[in-house]
Image 1 (cartoon, rainbow, N blue to C red):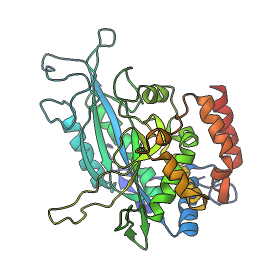
Image 2 (cartoon, rainbow, N blue to C red):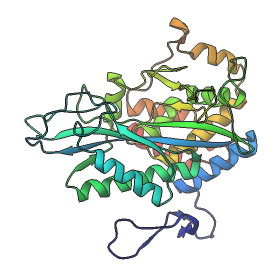
Image 3 (cartoon, rainbow, N blue to C red):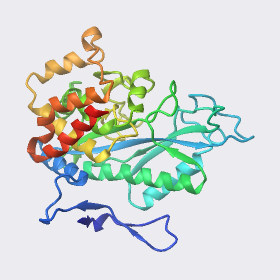
Image 4 (tube, rainbow, N blue to C red):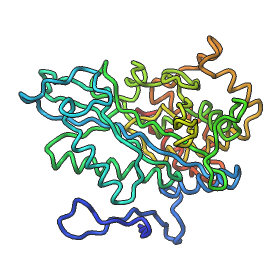
Amino acid sequence: MLRPRVSGAFLDPFSPLPTLAVMCGHAGRDGQPLPQSPDTLVRRAHARALAETGISLHALGEVEFFLGRRPGEGDIYGTDDRGYHATSPFVFGESLRRRALAILAEIGVPVKYAHSEVGYVEAAEAEGVIWEQHEIELGLAPLPEAADAVAITQWVLRHLAHADGLRCSFEPILRRGHAGNGLHFHFSPVIDGVNAATRSADGRLTDPARWLIGGLVQLGGALMAFGNRAEASFVRLSQAREAPNSVKWGEYDRSALVRLPVVATDGDGRRVSPPTVEFRLPDGSAHPHLLLAGVAQAMVLGRATAELDTLLAATVASNGANGAGAGVPRSFVEVGEALARHRAVFEAGGVFPPVLVDARIERLRQR
């Protein structure tokens, strides 16, 4: 059965008739939340992390997407892999992107900002389509709401693109040699309603940051089962353009699996946004609910890891050869093996049902 969550209902902005849109959970025959439901999984994982660590993990997704159209006489500005933070007339998708922000805000999806991205692809003779890349960065929200926000954002973008006669793609790679669509997630541990710092006053990683980073470097390959689900995912990672290529973490390193971004401050040095831990491995093929459920399980794993500081020292990007880190999986079979090795972590606390993990491993091994 579908269980509507009426508290998050909104008027469908694309319906010509007044229509209420609702996100739903699933219930089984017993009336309880269905264990296999992605909605159930992310809610159970979030609740378990809160109960065992005292942390309500919040997240925001960076939704990257391509807009495609046939070239015309006015398309004279674009250049391959250029256009980061460009504005019109140098990008044709600016109006659509702004309309998406307005719609998302009106229907209750928190947004941070949006901009054009680097992955411009000039029209090739065979395809004859210009692909222009954009990004919408959402606002921080508890994991279940953050997963819903990504799904709703992609829905809004597809609607707008269809109405404008454009193509909209979240594919990890549209053409080899060009930047692809990541779906990076930023995480903010919230304790007693306050966004926790990632570093203490003396510069050391705080415990919430240590747990989250330690869990992600251990489970990164296994999380690809839910965060990198397309064949093109491996192309994006192998060519390492705006994508991680090894299991490491770094302060500002964009090639790392996990990084600590710059914390924005005002003229007086006060923070204007919460510090976050960024997970750069997922791409546009990700299933946000299953992926974020796995990240919550990873944080609990990091907290329980013996010799956590040794692990962090061995995987830090600035640690030369010792910090290079193992490579990320390069095939579905390798991802399946990683999930099989760590399945107990995903199943802990009754979050991921064994039957779901079995099915995912089997499918990965057959691809």
